[in-house]
Image (cartoon, rainbow, N blue to C red; front, side, top):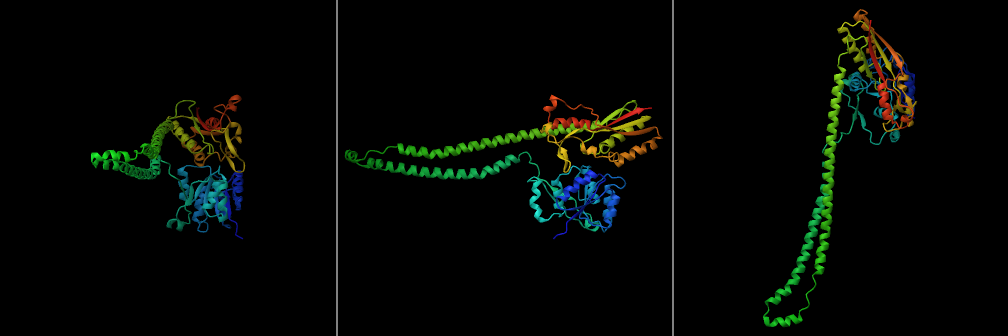
Length: 460
């Protein structure tokens, strides 16, 4: 009997630990949990789990500092560490892997994601390979651990998980695929057609030659013998069978020609569709570039430094920490602008939660519903991610440090207040008859506007 694999979950959120524990126990893994990075390091002094799932934002030592401590210890350096956090983005993933993490799992993780990670780390027996399809699509991108470099072998860092994805089809690939598929069939049709026409012409030539020989022989005899030959000559055979045979021989030619024309028409139609799709893609890319440029221009626009009530609003994507990321950058820009203008007063920072249309359950987690799903069929209207956050978890470490340092840097001329505004909506949600016809996509677009952080400067 094989020894069961063991996993350690490090997270200060009890609900996050319970959700991930149940997913791992479904694969017969023994699961231990720690509420902080310090407790996890104490656990690793006596135990060696097969994998560690590490949260990022925790009181005291954060997840990145914990990874550095684990990888710097030769006894624990070879233990795979997977970040299990709401943080996301290519920059964050690169930072995590540079510190030695094998990858990043979101807090809204699904069983299929967990099973893929376990297979990549060889923590599931071979007999379980057949059941991964219960949670994963048939053609999921295949993730493979990258090769370990000599530097990684010396430090004990685990290689990052490398995801191989199929490249999207480029414009013109459809035309090339159609031509490659049709060309062998057309060459075979043309060869068969030439053989059939040659055989038909040979038969026709023989029949014509057989019919013209008696006439040519009669022309060479003396005129005196012509009456006798005419009396004994048999009546000339009818030409209708020959005409019918030629007509029948032309039927396959006509059919093959028609099929060829149909194939050319289909190819032309596919080429036109391909060209149209390419133009649509180019137009959409141009629109996206324009929107990104407008967003960047709006992001760097200076705040009103002399107004008594200068304010800003920043949207918070579902599942992100409210007071972190772009919200932190907006606060820095606003504070710098106010300080440059000699502003004295307070900056009020308030976070508000949107009510999203979600699908899922409390065990496996919730995710944003498909746009076409009716609102009435949503499993939950709410924001469980925001509900699970404590006051400390709503702020990133950088945000908290900025709020603390501003009064010291400005001699108390400028201070920052932080509050949780709850579910106060900036855009009202539909009700009554309008709600009955609403889709999840329309509802979530309103919720995304209400899931926000507002900054307001108030002069003394």
